[in-house]
Length: 256
Image (tube, rainbow, N blue to C red; front, side, top):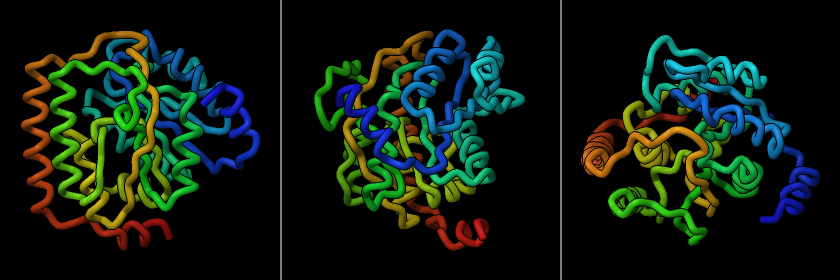
């Protein structure tokens, strides 16, 4: 979508109260740039940075750029960091929460598309997928194979087709916010959350998005870690299926 179309979308559409959640661990090189792009492309949204025990200036940069900074006492991991953002969103009455990484791979220009897709569909969660369309994003073959296998497993479990279950670029409505504030996977949250939400009766869909190379820092995912990750997340999903499905009733009762 062109810049002119995105601008028209923002002007013609009344966006609800929206929070952009950025989990960040040592993202000082890119965080200020990411927050600036969010301000430019989603000016109606508030931004919260969950500073997950960073040892660099991530927290100070978040505050200097006008974001709410939630400082974790130590590195609690991506799942707990994102859930902290959901708790903040639930307690402060946000209708929509968007997850956006702090490394610059997620394109804030497409936040309006995620939110609009969420509101225009019957979905409770919309995931931005790199693989519905070929938009030039290059994934190392080891990681691409692992993502493909996870997508096949999750599609089988949910009886719905998914292409990018590891994508952390997502928009959630109020029902999803409240459930994730209460129950959220802490180890491998992106792929584990899809069957979790599906079993709770929530609707999940994907839309195509364009993702960028990292703006700063380096990825910690090596080929060996990719294999280790894939094995552990498959086991986590299968074990999760043996647990009782989360109930939306307690979520609705908490919101009253």
